[in-house]
Image (tube, rainbow, N blue to C red):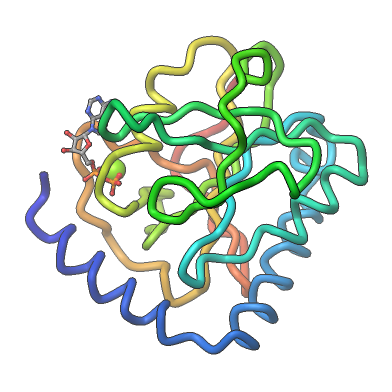
Amino acid sequence: MHPDKKSLRMSMVIKRNAMSPVEVREKSASVRERLLSLEPVTESTCFLLYLPIKNEVDTWPLLQMLLQKGKEVFAPCCRPWQTGRMDFFRVQDRSELRPGFCGIPEPRPAKENIFRNHVSSVAIVPGVAFDELGYRLGFGQGFYDRYLSALSGPKPLLAGLAYEFQIVKGLPADPWDVPMHFVVTEERVVAGATEYSS
Ligand code: ADP
Ligand code: MG
């Protein structure tokens, strides 16, 4: 693994933990508005959505809005028996979610609700930092890299959510890192270097 990833991860997490609840709420609202103004997002009927911990961009209101619009929403559930592996399961109400791995709110891993990649979807991805090519730094266990690279079928449109301070120049990337198509912050949409083709 690239040696610079660890120190950047730590300094970014410290910065994000220091945000006030008001700052998290206001910036998350701006990120959400901008995300929902993007045509590929409004047109999609199927979403893979993370739920926040530790001052990550708040996606609870987004979950509510997507469900109200009748979209299909799936949230990740980590596999307790396999490091760095997760699956996505359908969520129809926020009350179905319970704290799981690392305290992350997770759906119940019921087989019949597992995400099968048959239609093109939008994946809304958390990150500790992103760069201007769409590269992403996660918590360091490669959950999204593994999940996205193993996914067969139409590729989801990959949308990272972050605060502006999490956008850095030239993130150290490893060969397995899956870049985002774009990253939305409270100030702009950062278009990644990878064109979207499902
Ligand atoms: P993160 O993306 O969470 O910041 P890294 O990119 O550093 O974390 O990846 C963490 C670990 O996950 C690495 O040690 C790497 O070997 C493993 N990993 C990532 N993607 C894959 C993959 N597609 N298959 C197997 N292992 C992977
Ligand atoms: Mg990675």
